[in-house]
Length: 591
Image 1: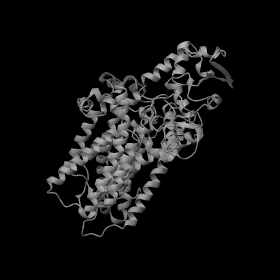
Image 2 (image 1 turned 45 degrees about the vertical axis):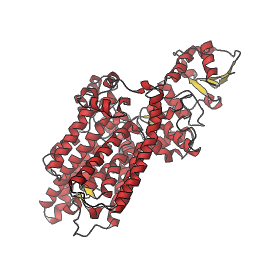
Image 3 (image 1 turned 135 degrees about the horizontal axis):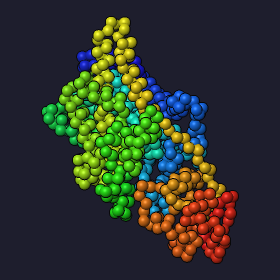
Image 4 (image 1 turned 90 degrees about the horizontal axis):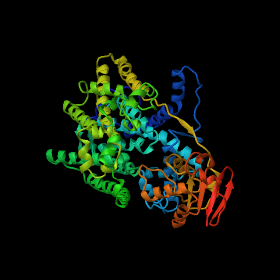
């Protein structure tokens, strides 16, 4: 994957030239796939502890985390995401019965739609049962999300016409951009690889590249269909990233259709047209299915839409483009004061794409394998994307918020930085490709490969070095025995967004129906149950429990101390409420 690029590998052969063997393309893709996975394992799991040990001078010996008993990230949202994948698999095994209601968020009917569903990961959810399987599964998916982000970026740039090393630079910039580590608890936001991979497949299927444009002899309808299927899979993970993808994909195909008309409607093969129709219908059906579920939540709870002032609290500033999140190993501690200056939710506001990427993209404006017009379009798209990502601190997001359906339900415009990152990666790859070609032309034949590697591989290493994370690996408390013995529906006390994340993970052992759950929006009915349970076992709380058919209250002794729920520790059995002490915790059976 890191072998040098020659003129033949930078540009595709013309119609008069012999085509590269299919076996060569397959081998290259296989090597790239394996390399992406191995690189992700090294970057996410193996290198960080030793790199940190080197930086701090060996104060604390480096150790590798146990992927079966520690969860990567913050131990909060990560556990809720692990539950999501486990629930999707459990629901599929049971014929998708109760998929959207879930075992959590009782008595809500669309609890799954309160978060991104991550349904695309359902095959992983079919493997294993219980808490340990959920943790191990999540850790594996976390690493694979980075691998797919690298592979998707690499595949897109190879299709557009970049060299191998240049494509690897783009893949590294997309997978290990510092801003991504502000979302270590959001697998739905880190799972971006399907976007670039879908675009790569669609471009290949339509015989299109930046270096040669459309070539009918290069059309591969099967790749076009595969691109639509990957795009549908990406949307099935959720609309946190998928919403913007849907609109960008629609915009790209609108531009492609206009370009086809302007060029005099060059002939398209029947198989390609049929493939686009079939793939497009599948993509539309999947998008519509998930959009319907989320629309049900919006219909049921009109206040789920975010106010402009609420969006402002999560909007980045121009300075955010230079600030790294806390989980960046090279820059996290260095930028601590800068993050503090960003205010609340700083990790949602950091947008550093990488200083090395900035320099390479800037150089790509002047020296590149892409044409001047293409570079200017990439620059314009980058600027527009950045202005949108600034949210209320930019001039464009207001238009998106008001007139583009779905965006009024999003609170985090900074996530749109994904799109400028993609465009800058393309600019950077154009520069690195031209740099390799120049070194190749200017060197004696026996030194050409070495010379091209000498000027390009260090750039790849710099991008990777800047993108090393400093991830926490949190050891989670064991599932309370009381949860396994309580009757469902149940509620676990205390109930707040902090403890409920752990409760969700514990519930993967059997998936009991329960009130507990974590989402960015808390429905009024469920919040009312939480609030009244602070008076437990008062008459109002017991009436609420009976009204909703809640059969058990589990009180976690070590968690309720110092909370409004602490009074439940001293409640004896009373008529209609039977107390059982199970280990350190308590179960109240509601009669």
